[in-house]
Amino acid sequence: MITVNDTLGIERNAPAARSFSQPFWDGTKEKKLLVQFDTSVGKYQWLPRATSRFTGRRSVLEWREIKGEGEVYSHTLVYRARPPFQGKEPFFIAIVTLPEGVQIAGNTVGITKEEMKIGLKVKPYWHPLPDGYNMLMWQKA
Amino acid sequence: MAMRDTAIVAYSEVKTVQKSDRDVWEIGAEILEDLLNKTGMEKGEIDGLCLSSSTTGAGNCFWSQSTADQLALEVDFCQTVDIGGCSPTGALARAAVAIDAGLCETVLCLFADTAVRESGQRQRHYQQEWTVPLGVLGPPTSFGFITSRYEHQFGLDYRMLGKLAVAQRNGAVLNELACEKLRTPITIDDYMNSRMIADPVRLLDSVMPCDGGSGLIVTSRKNAEKKGYTKAVFPIGYGEKTSYQFSQNIVDVTDTGHMPAGAKAYKQAGLTAQDINSFHPYDDFIIAILIQMEMLGFCKKGQGCDYVREHDFNFNGDLPLNTGGGQISVGQVGLAGGGTNLVEAVRQLFGEGGARQVKNTNNALVTGIGGIPFNRNWNTSVAMILTPNG
Image 1 (cartoon, rainbow over the protein chains, first blue to last red):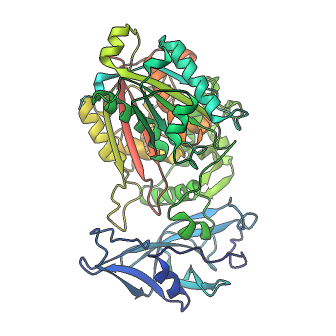
Image 2: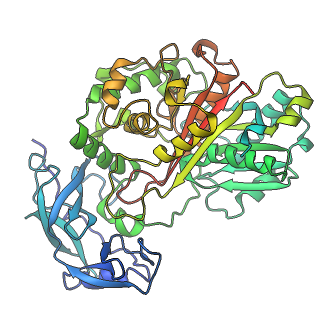
Image 3: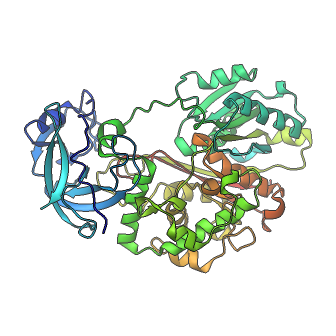
């Protein structure tokens, strides 16, 4: 039986945001999942970018809050990692497809090796970071 | 396009080692000297320098100039190509184009990296913000996603990945330039039993970081004829694709840029997959070979395992595959690692494969894979077809 680390005990800070991704990180302080939306084509995009991946336009982008309930697109159980994860393996990283048409990656909380499968329904788990931000993780819906 | 009006007239490769005791420029100097010896050229005849990316040089934004300075090469064309693992084949393509356009006549393509001895890289992309905080190791994690997804969509017989790993290892056993640690035979069971790195990616799926280098002399066909070289290899088809389908959020990660890049290369060469004599795909992970077989038309999408089951990939098999061992069994020479399979293809077409010489040398297909983007397969795909029959 392999015990999967939920990574909650691993010390980490929010990464340095870029000028165009700061709104996402600010949103996590209130556990809000903010995603860029291109109003000209009516589509969301992830990762945050300095421009629309669809049109190459900036003025058409706005931030919208989404619920974040979706299903696992793919996953890997990591057995080898760098500090501060080193020695804390194994842990999951899952890519989740959301109904808004974006895919967001995250660690998982409370999902066993036996339970993990493509198509598993998941929802956000917000893990507090020392600097007031929250890390988006995935738990069973 | 007349890339085919250029000729590779010499190749060189140093032994791949786990950690070099020599500076990257000393490796470059050894390759230069070997190429001068093989071509009988004077240094002054080289009027172009085209480098692959180098992890060691990555902190130096004057890399190609600094290398030209260190090697004392006075050139009319000087460039570093930074499309990751596609850089060596991409450098060859750019050298050919520069020669054809008249910018220069004879180019040293140099692929040297000592990533283990000295990494100069400070990457600036999405990873620090979006994947490092999740404990992503890098490529193994990404290929874990790709492999899980492939298995979900098509089913995956891992023993067939093992068969590819074994065939490449057989090549490394016969290749004295391969990293010594990797020159012992393996079995499919060894592959299956190797430890997980990023489940379902195993240790024997993965490249081992190493130091080393390789290089080519490329010149105009006219000059090659004038100098009377008896051996030459010509690029007759090339395709390159960066950011394949990146205008979409959600893609099928088992579709890669090798499909359009390969189609372009085949069209230029007037060949199909069924005409290819030996296959030298970029191999950072074994699954990448399987997917490229599908994308490049050796078999249909999703049928890679059946194809692998039915064919023999040893040097004397029906589709010789990375006959020197590939990067997975030679060792990955950092960002110059694409040179390993490229130079092996040229070696085979020169008829200098020695104990692992392939029988059919009408052509060879070489590919590249470069960069690991967020939730995709890779940033850049290249495909090049070479022939000794000008």
